[in-house]
Image (cartoon, rainbow, N blue to C red; front, side, top):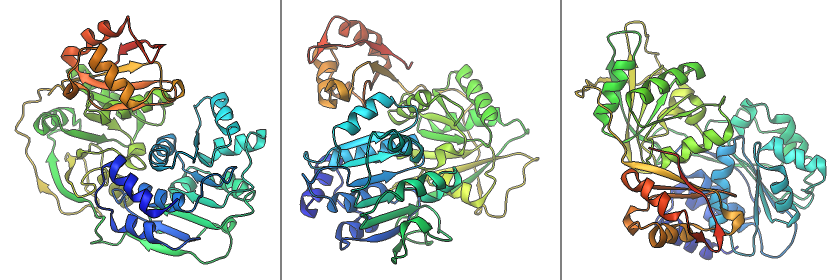
Length: 440
């Protein structure tokens, strides 16, 4: 795919006027290429390797020729959305991950896609079932390779790549410097693009602050801090799932618009939590370190270390959720007398919340539609449906997320019930859909 066309799509469809240095290098790198992208969160690496991958593929050659493997469902969906948005209409992209319908994926693979984006375990399962072949793959991306190793996917990746006999372009990405490259990708040299160095243009702009808690139980201090932040998007990090559950229940009971995200939740609940956080319905996300990597969420104004991170790497990944892509952010560490601030923390200025712990409502609710991409429903279709049949003004239609068989729309909470009633008797593109409210 030609570079000029790709860059035009980036500007038109992603509203990005200027590429980051990493993205610019990938848009100009000579092909075929073997590259390692070392980039901190916020550097735009997904778009960077998407530009390289799409440039390496030509329309109409047939068969799977590009594969992206990523360690989590959320990261796979993020990559899939970017590739689908930028790809030429002649290039088909399929997505596969645990928790998704195997039958849906089998049908998508039977349609002879050009690119497959998948978690290693699910892709290997399809290979073993004979649903897809990777023999003709010429371009491979191992995204968040270091995280894939942490999650135990080395064996799956080795088995899959061992079936790729025609690789020419290979990209590995990592948020940390790799001690060694995998043995299964061959001995040809790789060129490293290192954007992890201190002072690089991709470094997040984060102010570090300390909030002192008078007791080891920090809930009242957290209440005051969140009230002080006035409804901006905040991720509250804890070290354990049960603690995250406890803090989330406390905040929800107090009326804070908060969501919960950790690895013990059903994947549909995790996806819904991220959608409602991204669209502003629940601008507070209570999470374990699962949310510290691989999520591309704009506008996170602050992160809160309710529990101090156990390692310097964990702190870096948490803080990287804010201050992204030129925006500024804040990282708050809530500390009590029982805490010892680790040496790897930067200097912390004191911050004293002035609010009295009063929740700030988001003013938004999320509507759920039981139809999506596979029913040929687009964002534009849904926006028109909300406006012309639901009675909303264009400015009242918030973020729209469309999945395979469902969609989510942010709308003013004061209008949500009326919109649901108004849409009950209407179809969208001759398809009967059920619309329900899932957020307050």
